[in-house]
Image (cartoon, rainbow, N blue to C red):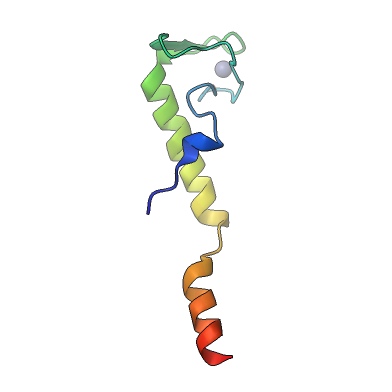
Length: 76
Ligand SMILES: [Zn+2]
């Protein structure tokens, strides 16, 4: 099951260069330009970089609860 990161992670509004947020970025804007670090790149590419980075962070910190819980219940 894929995590739906966009629900709680503003990947398309976050600068993949400096991590700054642009809340004024609307859906019709196809190019992301950062006012903080000056980065300009395709909006989808920027989002993809953020998402890949976010997923890498998540997979290293998230504890897999499913199998652990099943194992615990079967032995209790
Ligand atoms: Zn930036």
